Image (tube, rainbow, N blue to C red; front, side, top):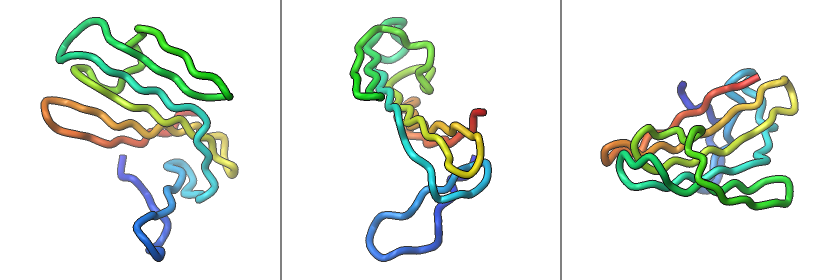
Length: 102
């Protein structure tokens, strides 16, 4: 999916838009960080959200099939979308994806 941003603004930051309805009122409420060695079956999973932090070894939600990954979970004020922005490490490349989940 192509990331959508609000028109050009002053400064380096731009406003990320909801991938479902293009609303500029989206809020992040949970962040997941995944770390593992290349192709390892185990690793570290850290979740921060709702005033809590947790650490475990669950890698099933890792957006990368091989290495590190980050998921930033959002919710939209204008529609029922719950988009997830993923930063994916794969064979030396860094990929970004933004998918809407309802």
